[in-house]
Length: 203
Image 1 (cartoon, rainbow, N blue to C red):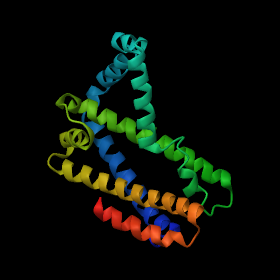
Image 2: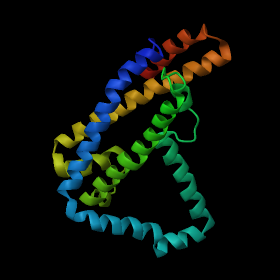
Image 3: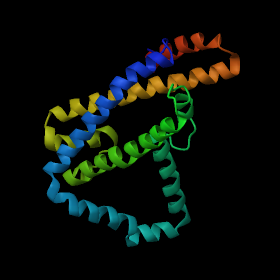
Image 4: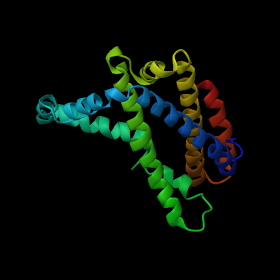
């Protein structure tokens, strides 16, 4: 897929991304429906943590404020790359007749990823009480999903992460390819692609 270039990457991701986004979103909604009675307490916890005394006291402490801002930027870039400038390379390779349409897709992907997927994930975690387990990352999400899917939750989350990661690797391979093309010319891109795939195996 990577060696095939942007057209091959586009064909693969246009099949993977909608499927994985729909499946993961549906799974999170099912967890939320199962724990619908916990939604008011989730809102209370979110707003209490954001605007409560501890948050205010932490905000006045410069180090805490700096840490909050730093973590916000890290999570924003990790979640949707907004402001990073990388997605421009992929959007500019599209063959839409009207550039505004592609720009709107760029805006929508940030909205969907951050507002829909991340919020549903947070609600799934908080409504199931998985936050109290002390787990972080993928194990935390697996613990939340296990409240609705049992032992299958681990496999479901693992598959979702695999698909999200695979599409991310494909996208970033193209960013690197364009960087190599800019620095060393078009002839260098095939060498880069081969090295990129080899280092995926090393990783």
